[in-house]
Length: 154
Image (tube, rainbow, N blue to C red; front, side, top):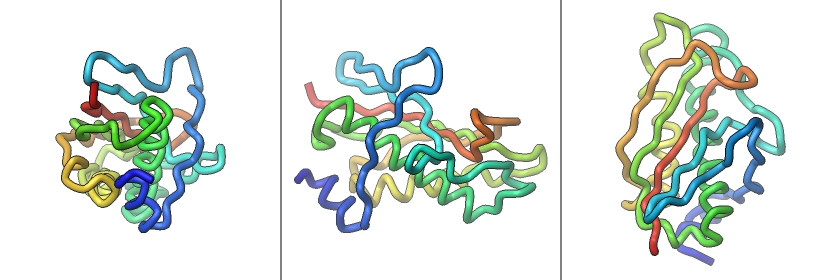
């Protein structure tokens, strides 16, 4: 079991099977020593778990939980791409999209749900650059969507 997977186990997390794309794109692209992972939604067992808008019908804690689910799904895609999460050198960047009202300004706190989890799961190699932005809507009404770039071993 890899170090990341051991940490996940300690956290009580079992990675799901990587989700299939919902449209005409691929879930990940390897290019040189980088792995680009398409936006992941807060899905569990094939269903979106958190829908709606932050600042209206979704609270901050629910948004953070949605972001954590997105991060779990990012790691599932990374494992599908690489076969072993230990082939990740580091998480370079995440971009988090938060389905939110025009006056909601806590996108960074929402995406902390993903950032905090990724550091817990990956240790120092999970520390990353990021953007946290508002979106007027997201696919399937999801509250959060997150994409990622990893540096990977050759």
